[in-house]
Image (tube, rainbow, N blue to C red):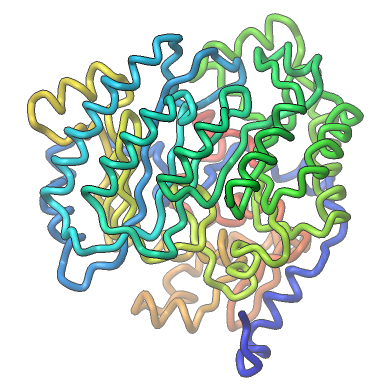
Length: 475
């Protein structure tokens, strides 16, 4: 927590954490075009397929220097029994649960290929099981996965271990297996509790299942629960979404992620069904749901962490935001800064100080690479020094809501105000509209500008093209 001697430094941040006014919908209409989510910089849209140029072995050797920091692990478990038509994730739809056994065989190969290149004394401070639906795996398969990981990595005693959970597929035995793995955070996919909306998105999930899942997890000692919601889904209205908010708040989650539905049918053809049925809410209805979300969660005492993340005031994310230690990576906002991210499984992404790499997106290509004894990398990026500098600027905006010129100049060994004068000059319209404040010491995002963090950050993105369709709307 903040010490008395740090109080003066923390006060500007704390002031921006005070409950903001209702979102200015006129400003959101004005500025909310497509923009990256900045889980990385450069964004993943800039990755290339020249794998040789990625120099993966060299990059791994650089990352495993003697003073290397901790590890963050991500495992992509892609299987689902049915397809949710809104979904933008990399999934494999099957009813054959034995497919997970074969997948675990392949994961073992990838883990061994990677661990052979790692310093195994590095502690794992974070592990996340994503998908797909990790709870597609049976309890026995989850126990097998637990054994695979514990045999290869040294986990810190206070490691954050989290899993995405589908309440429709959860049993008490699943919960016991997850706890055996050490899971202490769970993220439940809820999306919407209205039966009509659930039918429209092909995800029937009575709220009683959400209640049961939360009860089981809390009884087992899982101390932090996140609920995922989506606004802008077909047949949603502000009135129906208000009832969904009421339903989920009765579960008292520590965190909520309330995402804007990303309609990208050119990438996810299943989403075209919504257009054929003319089911998507009008833009004004979607904005009303965004405003409703903000109002209800502020009334309930949650802190707006940024973008679509909300947390209780005593949650680690809220504390990290207040203390200026919040971090962002491909898993979203996190408190585990300084860790190298290693992704395993189809389509997973890894991140080290100067590189990104993404695995093959299809099972066939991923397995073929492993069968050849190769790391299954399909594409990625080696960051230039300029990329790394801009990443610092963008992540400070996304995580600290400010640019402190003196601090950044010291960290980057350049005069930030001078080097990025054109980008700073481009903020004049944002400042005129009250989204930011600036002076000789830096730039600060105001409460009015917080919903448009991605827009502010994009002014420092040398790769960004505002007219592109490669990104979803900023709100």
